[in-house]
Length: 252
Image 1 (cartoon, helix red, strand yellow):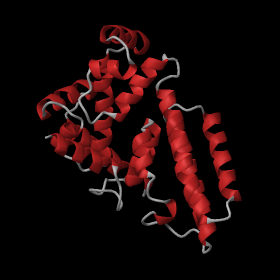
Image 2 (cartoon, rainbow, N blue to C red; image 1 turned 120 degrees about the vertical axis):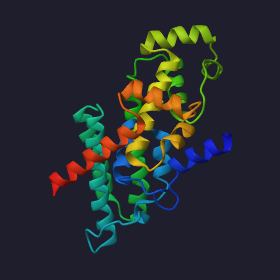
Image 3 (cartoon, rainbow, N blue to C red; image 1 turned 180 degrees about the vertical axis):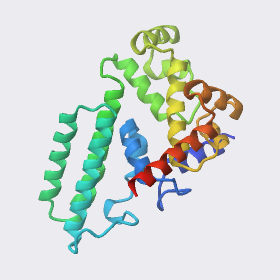
């Protein structure tokens, strides 16, 4: 069971030959992952170089200029998604200006390819810091990072206490004081947010998602998901697909 759970998680975050299981919209998934501040997953998604990205359109006959154009588009979209996620507009656009200027000075496609993950991870780290509100103590910040990086596992108070070298009872009180939520409540919220992304941008079945995120059973996953969203996982996916189809019809 443990190996299968890890396998499902690795399949979700790794993209060695394009997007596994063909997500409904891989580009939206990519930008949403940056917006969510998921650093480890963005690192995985950026392993494929920009120059090798499947389906990269031709915006210029010159390979270097073509890659620069794509970098500008990507950076602009990343900035907009981060603004939607709460990043200050001036910070998001100033950062995009800096990276676009760096790209403009690049002399080779290799430089652009190396700049792409640097830009994406920079935005992602800033979004993660924003989600932590940067007002938490060092121990709680480390706990939150640990939770984000281990959502595919069963996380206990003891795990976190050992990680930050604090007494479990004291950590529980400190976590509730600083975040306004108990450790278990905070973990459930983050797992449900991840489940919502998986339902929206991948083809994983609810049973697979429950296993991936270490819920004890599919029925418990459905119960918790309904508590936070008012919908079952299947209803949520159906609603998302209907909204996406409506948006596409409007654009056309």
